[in-house]
Length: 224
Image (cartoon, rainbow, N blue to C red; front, side, top):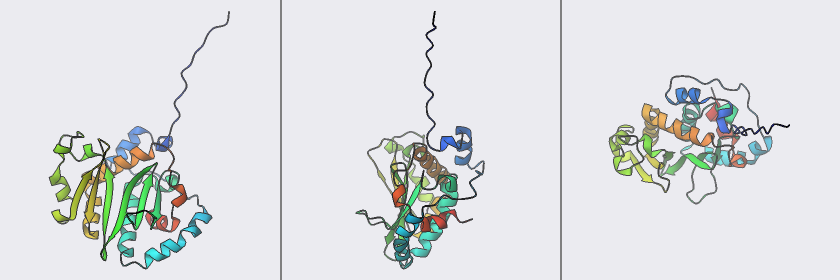
C-alpha cells in the first residue's frame, strides 16, 4: 500500500540572506566584522549613459563635493556587501524627478533609505530608521524617543529634527549641514540603527528602483 508522505515546502531565501546568515548580519550591524564583497560589479551600460547627464548636472551644483564625500562614506559603512548587492538590492538615484526635489536618494526594496537635499548652498539629509533603535527602552513608543541621543549625534542641537510616520516602528531624522551629517553617520549607535534598517529592507527582496540606478554616483559609493 502506498504511503502518504507530506512534506512542508521549504521557504525560499530572500534578500541578502542568500549571501549572509543572520549571525553574520548581526555582527556587521554591531561592527564586529568586516564583510567580504565581490571583486567585480555587474553593470548596465544603458543605465550608466542614461543618467550620465543628470550626474554631470549635479557636478555643477555647489553641493556636489559634499554630496560625493558623504555618499562615499555611506556606501562604505551603511550598505552591506555593496558591490555584490548593487542595483539588485539597493540603488542610488541622481536628481530624481520627485516633488521634494532631492539631489540623491538611496533605496532598497520599496523603501527610501537615505536622501540628500540642497539647503541653500549647503545640504541636508533625511534618514529613515526604526523608532525602537532610538528610544530609551528600545520600544516603538514615540514618547520614549531618546532626544539626547539625537542632539549628541550632530554638531549643534539645532541641526537635527525628526518626524514620525504611519508605520509604528519607523521614523525619519533630518540633519542639516555637511559637518553634522558626517558626524551623524559616524556615531556608533546611529550607524548601528542605519545598518539595521537598511538590512531589514534589503532582506525583503529585490530592489524596486533598479531602473533609476545611477552608476556614476555608485562609483563614488564603491570606491576603495
